Image (cartoon, rainbow, N blue to C red; front, side, top):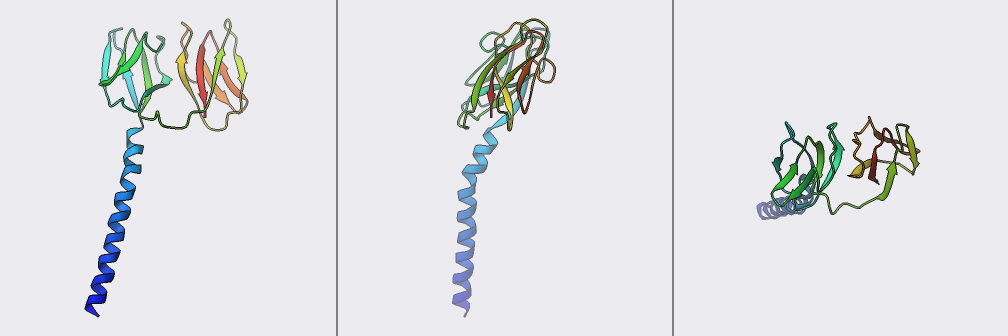
Length: 160
C-alpha cells in the first residue's frame, strides 16, 4: 500500500513539474512583448535601454513634436532612441505576432478624414509620414467604420 501511494505521489508530482516546464516558454514569450515609453527632453537625444530583439513599433505618439522612424526615433540592439522632442509609447518584442492589414490615411488641410476599414480590435500607428503630429485621440483615432485623421496627420496604420 505504501509503495502504491509513493508511485502515485511521484507520478502526480512529475505531472505538475512537466506542466510547469511546458508553460514557461509561453509566459516568457508574453513577458518579452511589452510597452515602453521613451522621451526626448529639451529636444535632446535620449536612449532607453530595452531588449529590442523582437522588434520595436511605435504604439502611440505622446508629444506634439513629430515622431518619425529613422528621423526622430529608432532602435538598435541596446534599446530605443528618441530625439528632437519625440515622446512616444513603443511596443517591443512582438515581431512574431500576426500582422494585420496595413492602411495609409492622410488628412488634407485641417479637416477630419475617414479612411474606411473593418476595425474589430485595435489600430496602431506604424509610421508617421507627415510633418504634422499624429497623436492618438487628438489628430488620429479609429472606430468601427475605420481610421480617422485630422489637422494634417498622415501615417501608416495597422488594423488588427
